[in-house]
Length: 200
Image 1 (cartoon, rainbow, N blue to C red):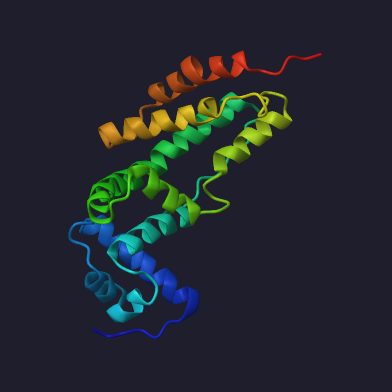
Image 2: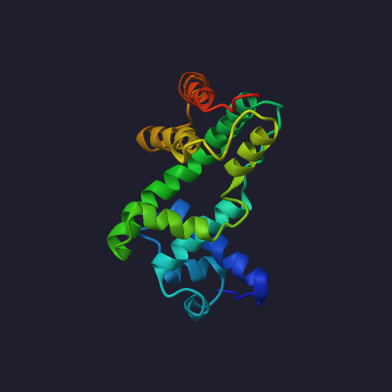
């Protein structure tokens, strides 16, 4: 193995890219610190100086991939249009990601004792400014007077994404356009209308 001399962020990125590739190609169960080091062409001690073990490295790799592949927030001029566009992008660009993460979750829970919610919290905590993309979408809608973030229940705001993730976890496939439209038009928008600001 020919080792490459890299330092700082370049080395960190190479290690996390290698760990993500191991998760995709080998799966969490077969991924080892040694296999990641070999793929990254470095020594295993380099990994242990940054992560305590495979669990921490896998979580960091998942967060890194999500951070490096953010979803653009659409600006169609309406909440409905933005939500349809965002959920469509969410489906097309997050389906493969969801498959990999879902398979890793079972191994992480067994190995680390963390719950799915705790794993998700660990992943999102390393993605400041990226994980809150739906928040940006909602802030724009509030500026247009379409929603009132002070009175809108948080469950309504997270509901479209919770439904999308649930469908992805059940099917491990992209969500059909008609299902996305139904989530927005039949479920989300009626709830938004129920809490829409009253114009004076």
